[in-house]
Image: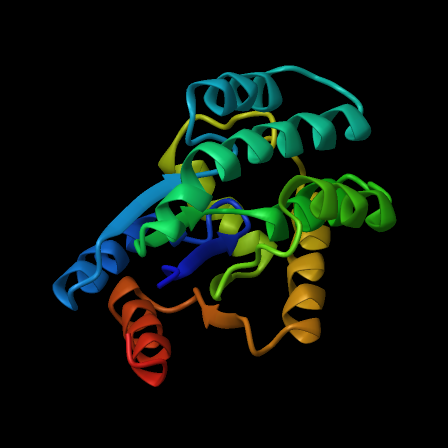
Length: 203
């Protein structure tokens, strides 16, 4: 039996990383064999490409191509084999992030991104995506208090506003797959919302 594929999305500073381990722990407590991974990344090649994408200036098409190249290796080497073994894969970002960041944030052509999506992973889609939704100004405050910024995190508030809007458009188009999590409240309340989504699916 094919395993479940769960992705976690949101603008930088939305707090998704705070809840990733708790999500993995809950699924394991319910009997699932869980593989936790991330994008860009998850394989030696994809991690090397991640370093380039986060550190080197480049145009948006080059950026998108590198992200999808990393995704191709990740899907073939890690995600698809784990799903075939019946494992649950929890991935920190997936293709929704490309439509949000390279598309909404950086202005890449959505048709080009859709073509890359089809070429790179065909019909593979997450069974559930948890979208941590947070206003761009609140996320900026949280990022400033948390860590030194990478190339994306140094973008201005308007950029993250566009990224958030792109995520909202994905949610509106696929509400059966994407669960919006209000990331504004304290972590305990956010986790309660996550647990409610999992409960509704019997997970």
